[in-house]
Length: 384
Image (cartoon, rainbow, N blue to C red; front, side):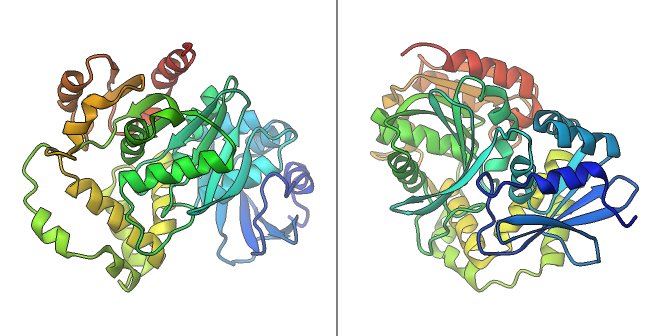
């Protein structure tokens, strides 16, 4: 084919850098027809132009059948439905791929920006109008892990999905503590920069722990909390704690990390990592981990999750009963990382909190989106 399909020409012609701007860099987004030809959208100088794919490694790859490309050219929401259903695949850089789709939509529902804060630039993906809601991802993930949540609740809320510092496209300061209190301070700085007095917060895994910390340390800045399989203080013996305290996460700055080797190990370790959300999640993890600053941040955050003291004057379980912010905990009955048994301990510490148990693993918003988002919508709609 010498001429790109009409749907791809329409998308490239509508590219709006005010919705998604790659800045000074040149980005290559490959648009692939399933079983057919591929074209590259070259994003530079605040414009998009199409060229035939010539073998250069793209920054992001979008693959769909001809009918899905036509739907994308007509309606971004239909394209997002195709993405969730697996008819549209986005690989390598989910931020860039989804950003391109948003910037080429007839009426974009998504807004991307880098928000300057006193801690550094925070990358956000935003949609909707109304009461603000922060979405906080888990360890190794990015704001893209909340795409289904953003789509589900943006009709009644201003939803702001965040790359926590050290992850995705946000700042990655060397030597930052990367613990729950640091992340919570960053979210307060983000609210200040956005001129928002208060927000609801929804967090998954490590992001759930950050949301809890917002409620504990900055209760005046949060209205309600939704904790999706949140990371909690370990109750079992931490046999590696003494050794881990001696290991500096900054070693990640000098650690060799050949892409082929690291990617192979990660994809063999994670079930289903060749397709769907798992594949996209691995891509997002690798995008940060394969940079020195991203590795150091990942090691620091993981280390702090393991080393957080459960008891004592400043221990997690000592502080948790003082959480007064209305909270909804969502648990996965097959969660291998935060076992359902933790629900009993949370009920004892917070008898006033609400709970939802689902037949899923560690990421309810992706594994059981309908049940998760229906309950979230009801919880957030309450006054107060």
